[in-house]
Image (cartoon, rainbow, N blue to C red; front, side):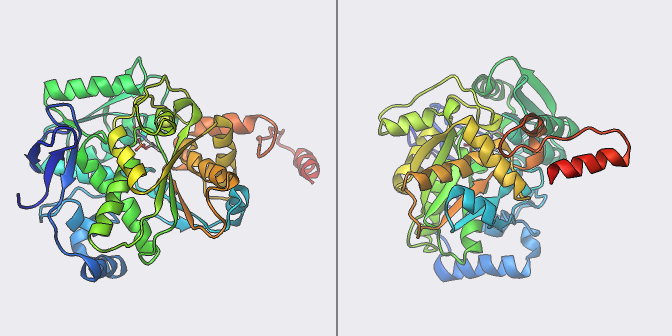
Length: 421
Ligand code: F0G
């Protein structure tokens, strides 16, 4: 078959890239398979030139810069633009993690405040190309915020399914603001995903969850952009928070394809970090991936409050191929990591802090060695979840910064300053 096509990971069936389906008829997940194309130094030079000089064809996007290996073809793209996120190093965070060579790639700098924009620009572009008339997703809040924004840009009606009462305020506000029809489902994320899969199938709406293979194509660019920022020198470890396992899967695909195209000789090891109260993938990892678990999920990091991750099989492949690891961190560790990242002036949402807490754990366990280079991916912006921040700081204790209410007089200000020393 010429050009990219879709292949079911479960039954091996192939479909043309123009298929409007998000998954296979057998229920398996589809992967985008690219034909062999430009590779090695030529491809690298093309990507690097675009990053350096800009290129009107990719409109300044850190996703479409890699268009040949995502969604080739000359059609118009629905881009904000997105990507081009920073790689930070901060002493205070390195100290807390206990590791000098730690960098943070901040995906919260994307236009709607999370990494989801990278996948959404590709999935919405493809939805438009295949003639979708409406789009839908289940979400813990970020996918829906992103889909709502890109659907608005494309002029497509958007239908969002989120777990009632379990979505952070910033995210829910975005879905409403960008004009998506927002359904608060009385159930958890896993129930939302089951419902939207059924609804999309019956009502003929394009499904834009990360089971949609085009989402993962866009999310691959987190890794490619990271490699590019490091002069194509891979770090030893890439640490990422994990919920529905779309990102873990996309990272594996990105690394595999980068190696196939001669952009990489050595693969970094991918570490997925789950919240202890929502850690079916961690349990499965501990069982040598011999079985798949489903759990009732509960965690302060609502973005990853997921008990039955859809991309389990793909993610297993990532961990196996990169000799990666899966770990889990408690809500307490997540909140402490978040306080440290926030107080460094960078900030992130709770799920993102799980990556930093996971990195710390691996350092403490001696898995990550002193000479290793480590990159943690911050997946969402600090303003996504103001509720968690306000709750955390309203209490006293380590890393807390409670607000102080005063009368409008100077003596009160002086008193507060004196108390703070
Ligand atoms: N971090 C953030 C901020 C997220 O929003 C998500 C997932 C993850 C990490 C986990 O990524 O699912 O690819 O393993 N959020 C989805 C959503 C589920 O609906 O916004 P994953």
